[in-house]
Image 1 (tube, rainbow, N blue to C red):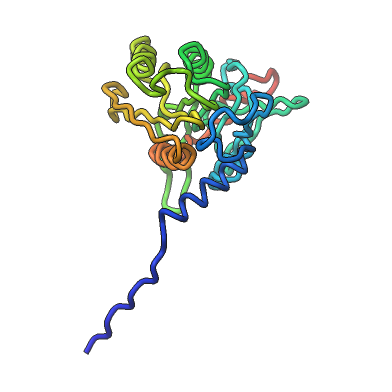
Image 2: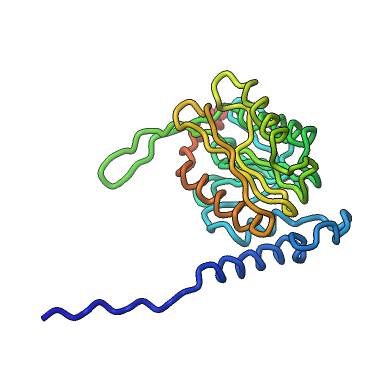
Length: 260
């Protein structure tokens, strides 16, 4: 006679998520502003970098950085770059500036106070300077042979703000702004945002068709779950990207005279 399976202990997942969101707010450097919008002054800068460093798995690094490629290209300085931590180097650090190889970048974010058309367009233009860079890829050896080089995936682009200036925060005007950005893109890889958060009003994500990156749906959260929604959706998008391509280090070395 087989033994009955043990009954799992109850776990309040909802309460756990709200506790996690409270920790995220503390890491971000704010109190419960979702319940009391406008009570914190703009002189308090939200510490998105620290919050994401605390939350994301250790395989990811989070840095303010310039992104560079093997052809000598460089992005504008990006407020937050989520990059590979285990297999890709920080190529250079000059003073407080970091330079990260394009191959190692998973996501790029701009940080602003307000979510509005000007800031969304500005963020998309900055992120496009990262996506436009050349990314090498190389085969990876393993015990049984060699894994083929993987094709670089679309770099996640987003914007992080305190509040939305639109009314309603994620209504028709907001969606039109996002769709207009995608209309600029011939191949679905350069323009457009994929995710963001306006802490006082909610988080948003863009779900794209897998192959063409066009024909997308936009969804958003309520204000009281803005941060937990954002970080869980970010994890889902990072999961879909998978691993960063292996860097062809020879391509970088060829840019240095006297090395070949």
